[in-house]
Structure formats: structure tokens, C-alpha cells
Image (cartoon, rainbow, N blue to C red):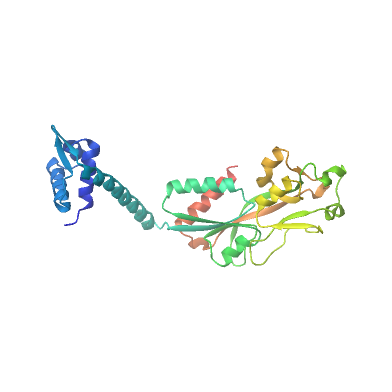
Length: 292
């Protein structure tokens, strides 16, 4: 005969409550019902779970092992019920999202951590992209929502924020030693650091007129190279604020061309038909951005 979940629950309750009477009170059952459940468990397993120690029932060695197993089993059963409840409410098992690398990753991690507290059984797949990578993921329906600098044809995007870019180099870089407003010709003479488009279309963005150029696939690598004096680049302020504060990077004197701005949009791949979890996560991202 198979042991039921109710019988395992009785075993755990007797141990945790410290006796049959308190376990019965905890479970809202009679003491005889709890005692019968333990007897059925021992009969089904053909093993003694409790032994008398004076006037108290204590776990046998086998009972101790079974108690630990029962605790894990009940925890898994509770998680399964929570998961089923989420699914019954329309919440999905997995959410996939694309995030342009210029979006503050710390903000996204804070949002995902909060979402995970409320929906611990929903798996998250985060795709970090550059330039056309985010909108391409939407076009190919590889993600459920996207933070992108472009809204692909056939989709609607809500403007999320403006990201300010500034041209920077290490304070000791030769461009800073000219002590004057720089021209495009000045920039052409020095190495520019570029982050490769993660999409298949290889879209270019920003001024790319330098004869010398290093292309990398990650903004973090580019920032590190600039901090070492290897080259200059336009960076989102959200990604280099610490380097600016630490004196590792310094804005280049480009006059009115020192800064530029890029718009980021929040796109739901399924639009109004997006599932509840996707909509909730999108709302949390929106609240995070506009709370700053």
C-alpha cells in the first residue's frame, strides 16, 4: 500500500509539534486520526518510525531519515500547488526578455529580483543585446518583451526613457592634452572603440569616422579599454557614471557635439494579448524607470 501525503504530513506534524495531541491541534484533526495515520504509514513501509522513550515517543533511526524525506516531500508538494495556482491565473512558466545593453542592468536586476519574490517558479531568460539585437528578437518572436532603441514594423512600443551619451576618454588620453575644443579631424586621428551590433543586420550607430577602430561585443569591455587609455567612445552615462566619478574617464571637449541622446522603448511582442506575467513584469520595469 502506498503512503499518502496526508500520512507524511502527520509524521512531520508529530515531530514538529512535539507529540500527538499538539500535532492533532496543528492539523485540525482528532488525536486518534493522527495516531491512525502514523500506524498506516508504519504498516505500509513495514518499519517502525517512533519508539517509546520513557513516556515520550521519539524517532527511530529510520524514522529520522523518513522525517527528513517527508519534510522535503511536503515542501515540494506546497511548491507544486503554488505553481499550479500561478498557472490557473494565467502566469507562465517562463518569460523571455531582451534588454538593450544601454539600459541600466542594475535596474533590471532589481526588477527581476522583486518579480522572483512574487513568482519564484517563473523562469527568466534575459538576452542582453546591442543596437538591432532587441528589435530583431521581437521580429523573430524569440522574446516576450523587449527594451529596444527601435520599434520594429508591425509592433507598438511605449517610450521608456532617454539615455544620454557622452564622448569620453581617459584623462591622460592625447585628445585631452590638446586643451581646446576638438574637431572631427582630431577624432579621426585616434582609435575609436565600437560595440558590435548583436543583431544579424549589423546596424551602425553614432560617428564612426576614425581610421583606427577596435570593435568589441560587450560595452563593459569597451569601457575597460577606454579606462586603460586605449581609445575613446560614446557611452551611455548610465554605464560609466562610476568611471567618471573615479576619474578613469573624462568627457571629451566637443563643444555642442559632446552629448547625444537615444530613446529606449518597451515592446510587448504579443501586444494586448500578452500574458499576465509579461504584463506585470513590463509594469514593474516602467515603475522602476519612472521612479528614478
